Length: 480
Ligand code: ADP
Ligand code: MG
Ligand code: ZN
Image (cartoon, rainbow, N blue to C red; front, side, top):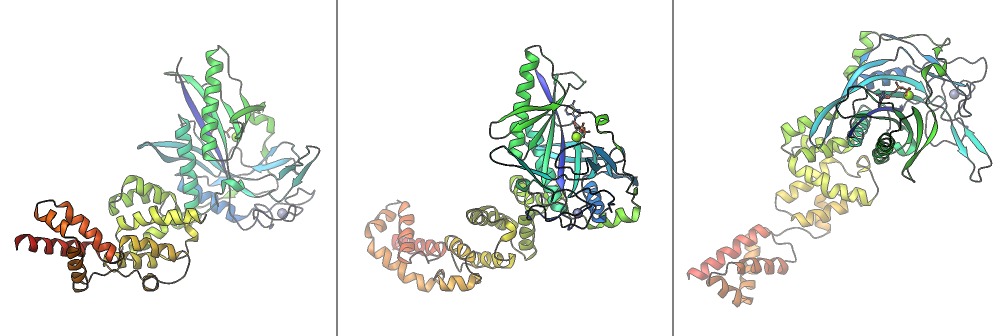
């Protein structure tokens, strides 16, 4: 039997607000354990939460970027459960009236575009973190993460393969980083994903029973986790078994998942309206002011690059996926540089240098103006392309301008014909065999002589000019 996978994702993103969602504790990763918490976020009796308006701003921004409707009057609810990292024994979330609903996002897999529905986006607070002692004899709890604001983005079960799911995750990450609501650092846990997977016989409309997988912390891990789960369910179904609705835990090291618990239902959480918080009322003016702050989003940007810059789909995709690279790229173009040339530099040598230095594009030590100046030196014939790479390398080390570096490194190219004529004459005289070969129609001799001239000039002769001069001289001898 052939089965079709059906996949839906619950994506949690920590919002990069200055303070937490219901108190003024600092919202910052990596602080000393239990130093960024207070009576409110540690759930002391008698404390009252106050909603951080920035959290609503950011969630609306995400909603608009993902084509959602913004709920004019939403509310917050308590989701009750006990766990040692949750001191209040409830998480404030949103149940039946989330802040954003009915959106979509476009993904692309192997050149095919597809819209994935966004069911809802709601705001909620994060829980603390358990730190398990290495000997396994104790667990410690760090409350710093309690009350860190999250948005949960729930997709429709529209994804049909691990590849599509990965493209969806990457697209969401790019959009969230473009709009600046989350720092999107998966390694610090600021993006987390629960993955729901079911199978149905090909051609059947009804969905099968799903499992939910937790603990996916990388995109490639997510892709593998889905492939594993599809294979696991296929095997059970083919053996005549049935899938149980359960929550499973992905183990990225072992490359397998294990049963965590049978799936809890919404009613198990005894959701009820949070009595200590007012409804969230959002008016048109608020929505418009946030819409006005939205930057050009990656999908639109890529289409524009393709239409305006004449670069390939692949190049445009790579540049747009990296917000900082796209910013740098556009700055260069605004300064008048050729889009194709700049694309080659940012995707080629610059990316390579940054990777070697373990730096991100945002940490590039020189401005767009400097790259443009370097490109001008090459285009104007002052230095060769090869010398340009040397200058670029030096630009990562010092703050000097390309012109200064060309001078300092002695890379100036000789394009002056009178300076090169003597050299050409000398090289031809030293290689009479090549001259004879050329006279006898062996045009390969030209290349050899040009190479010799380049060598004589220690790489500084302009190869085009030299080529021209050698050709002229050879033709003159031949016709003499
Ligand atoms: P819960 O909190 O119970 O996990 P949510 O509504 O938060 O429920 O999320 C359900 C997720 O599961 C959504 O992303 C949805 O698309 C997905 N989903 C629902 N039914 C199926 C199914 N049969 N197969 C795969 N995914 C599903
Ligand atoms: Mg869920
Ligand atoms: Zn606090």
